[in-house]
Image (tube, rainbow, N blue to C red):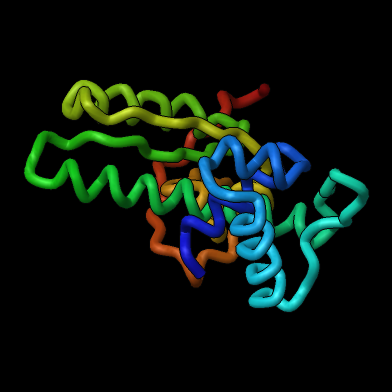
Length: 169
């Protein structure tokens, strides 16, 4: 599957119209229609509900849009990282943190890291353990900070210093 086809699919999903999407992509409408039909054939499922001059994502299309967006974002991230090799450390680290006492500790670590590597940015996401593990599994997070108990066998992990609440609180 070609990344160009993923971009075509996303544009059609955005516009809900093959003609408008073709104009924005600077391709002919028949070419774009054929690419979308070939994609659906390759996947073995229709992605759109077609109506007169309108196309709306069906359930499979909504799922594929999420995955296609994620794939293209990861590809862009990889390309950026490859172009930055040999230079100062730069880029974005996607960090997921549960809303607990570990958040303060993690923010201190982020500040120290940024002092040492000012070209690195952090994209922060907070959530519960299940949503953070899912995001990690999907590649949407680079690092997550979770609270035990966690099934950690499939992850590279380290235990952080335990942050206890003062007695009596």
